[in-house]
Amino acid sequence: MSKVDQVVKHLKTREHITSWQAIQLYRATRLADIIFNLRSKGMAINTVMCVKGKERYARYVYMGKK
Image (cartoon, rainbow, N blue to C red; front, top):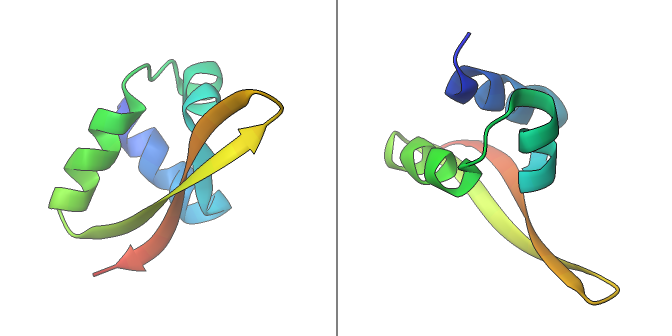
């Protein structure tokens, strides 16, 4: 199973993913690129910016198909 397939499965089952989760679970270091390509193929994925202390990170939330 490719990294893209693993990220899609993760989004469909858990509904969201962060870059750190993608790196730890699937060794997918270019999550933003994967999300960009999935959006261009018709998947509705929202970006939610999160703040934890002084750290900021993006959480990608699966919203279904367009």
